[in-house]
Length: 474
Figure 1: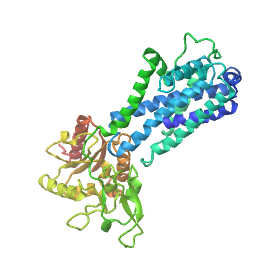
Figure 2: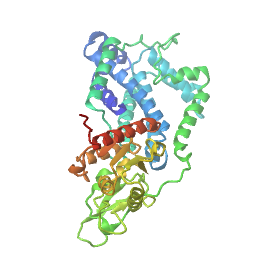
Figure 3: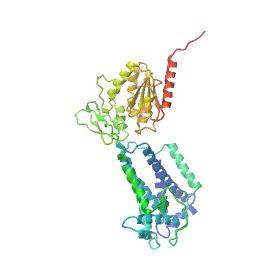
């Protein structure tokens, strides 16, 4: 969503750049006439630029809070988190310079705030403020520099976003069509209802007594005035250091990354296609077999989610080998062990419901029942669909896969790939004859154990009623 509105910022900014006069005497008039003389064209674009910028700041803040709340900042995710911290500073800097360009009393307030803030740094001093807000210092060259900084930093943010997303395969940088359209309409409606207008022109001989505050960007200056410039530096720099250090505050042991067995890898590339983080790459083979390429795991990027295991065509429990060895597998939780556990469990509980859960979803151990056998995986995407058929053949009455869901998957794509494989839309797919009430997919996130238990009970009851012949009374 943040990237979606960022495109609005860039698109509207191009138009504003075309009409903006970078001379010190005409800068204010060139922007003000958009709102007063071209309300339904230029004024709308100016308002869109402002509201989209505010929306970008809001959505970016919510994104940071969400990733922190979900714990998505440590381990293999450290690079994405750390590379996002500089983007916060770039967004703040570009936004402040953008307000400065308008050359109204709000711009004077922002320029004064920047001067006071920067002046608190060693080697600058309070006199630095006079170099930017005095009448003698405000020149055409200054406005040309501000325009260059405003546009340059925004474009540099695009490069930063590209770096930020480097370790994420199939990054969702655009919302679905309905959300995108409703967001665009909401922005346009805000522009029409509350058009952005300039404050009076900046008067360098006096300081305005009151000023409307855009809390998304220069709301830091009222905080500075309530404390001190040094306190604001301590807060912003300290906060940045905390964000940068956050990935290393968790000392939980990292699971072993996936490993490739070349004897069982045919270079099909399914693990490469399905990996959510680009941890699997295809490289020329080293064992001299007829297959041209092989899978290689970049261990520093591997999330140990097992989605690649579920994608491998050799991950079928029906292989006629005593010890199941797959082309790619998790050392800490090999598929051979899961296959053996299923056989042993169903020998002791024939006719049971086999439930495959997700470590990041509802805790399936809290839904235990004498009629159920439960297995928890790092991600539902680790389960090859053939394991559902294997469980049914070995005595299970039904198989239920409890996934986090398509939009709440702890590893981004596991829920989506699980659904597509069971529906026959993605290889390896569940055989068509097995699709039906005997194999069902449920969504259950953490904290939804009670709901999952009720759903499992309902499925078991419905299945028993279908299997029980009706009794006719005469």
